[in-house]
Each structure stands twice: as structure tokens, then as C-alpha cells.
Image (cartoon, rainbow, N blue to C red; front, top):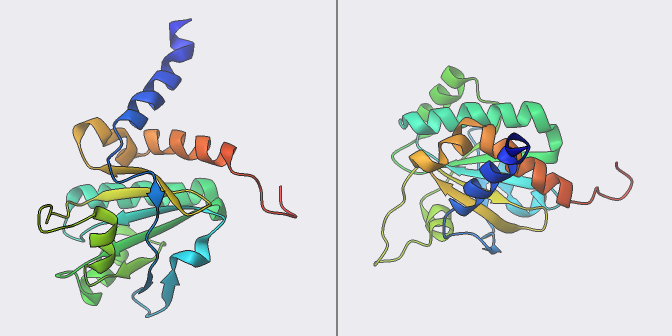
Length: 179
């Protein structure tokens, strides 16, 4: 009987471990990828978006990138995956990262402004720690955000993230004409 409730308890503990940057409208942006194609957050409205702020030299970011590739395989077009890098990452570093890690989802270039708006960077809070994952619902609201910590390890390795996505997808109505 207790085992039946274990997944619900695990999900509840993961939801409580989320960060303080949630429960607000996701800041809009339009950023280029390595091919200089623009990706505008508004173009993804109606889908769940996983937004990853990362660095190519970060080992936990590589773990999350592998997890996000599994998300793309498992959920297809129901979930959009976007990663954002900031200087000192550059086009050559990102191309190498994509090649070495077999990344199929867009990695976008930011000069720091988008990351700062998502992370609520201020002179009193000047830090951007990576990786940081934002879960944006189909209406454009940040539902969850996660910094890498031992408590959030299941999110970054997939098990916890899949449970959260399954819950959000169950709450999201199918677009008109699709089931």
C-alpha cells in the first residue's frame, strides 16, 4: 500500500524543491542559434517549453543536455527544448558541444540579458548559476525552476522531470483539431 503512494510522494518532494523564480510570466526573447536562425519564445506558445541556461564547459549541464535529448525523444513536439549560453561560450564552442554530445535541440546565444531576466539578476543578486532549468507551461508561465542541487538531481537526470512533464501534459488541453 505504501509503495503505491511512493511516486506521488517523490513528485511532491520534487515540486517543493523547485526554486523561487517560478509562478510568473516567462520573459519574452528572440535569440539566434548556431545557424543564426532566430527563436522567439512566442513561437512556442501552446507547448510546454523547457528552457535550460547552461555553459558548454559545465559537467552538470552535459548531464542535463542528455536528459533533454531523452525528453525530445519521449515527448516529441509536445515539449520544446531550448538551451541558452552566454559569453564566454561562442559559436565554435557550441558547435563542438553539439557534435560531442549529439545535441538535436537548439542552443541559443544570449549576451546575458535573457539569463538575467529569468534569474532575476540585480546588483544585490548578481549571480547566474548553471545549469538552471525553467519549465514554462503552454500559456507562457514559469511553472517550475530548478538549479542543480543534490535535492534536484532526479530532475537533471530525467526521472523527476518526466513526472513533472507528464503532470503538465495531463493539465494541458490538446490544440483544436488535435488529440
